[in-house]
Image (cartoon, rainbow over all chains, first blue to last red; front, side):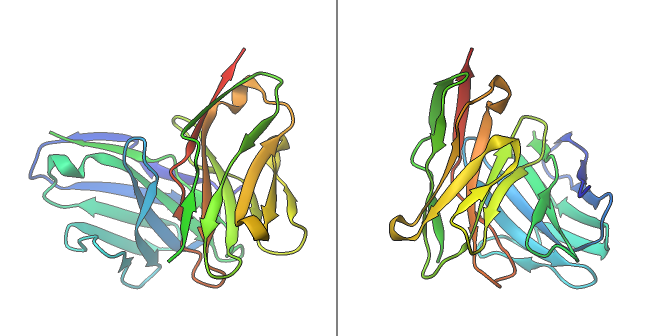
Amino acid sequence: GAVVSQHPSRVICKSGTSVKIECRSLDFQATTMFWYRQFPKKSLMLMATSNEGSKATYEQGVEKDKFLINHASLTLSTLTVTSAHPEDSSFYICSAKSGTRQDTQYFGPGTRLTVL
Amino acid sequence: AQSVTQPDIHITVSEGASLELRCNYSYGATPYLFWYVQSPGQGLQLLLKYFSGDTLVQGIKGFEAEFKRSQSSFNLRKPSVHWSDAAEYFCAVAAPGGGNKLTFGTGTQLKVEL
């Protein structure tokens, strides 16, 4: 149980285009989802917290107009990287919290974004 | 603000040997403490967590961790490492009742020699 998927697993795009990454909780309802960014050989940095049906809360230094987050249902959150640039290339990971198991986050496998 | 330090970037152990991965945290009170493992192509998997109570916590895959308040540490241990344990290990903390926003350490890469 408590499986989180991400799609796509890898994406390559041209500079200036937008990319959407999906995060789904497959067997539970996720009232809260988190988006992280992981740089090579670095830790995971929290980008934003999203609650179903409300606006995401972004961490300091994260551009909300650059990284659009939508949590439209209890099983789906999307991260859209708008007008992507090479410096946005990274590994993006989502996690989800179950409404019944508030103390534990379940992580997706991540999405490798490469911007050319 | 809370922070997590994992002093060892890389650790190599022989299969069957014991393992200890270090984690120190900085927080004003006792935080929630977690250990996650990340394998290539896989999401982070929760190994164990500590919220309160018994300071020795048992997790999955034969791992355990001990919370030591006096040392602000939460070290991960395994008595006998298997080759399949090779992965990246992350220690994380969260403020109790703080929406469970996780702060991660920089990770320890474990290599297992056969």
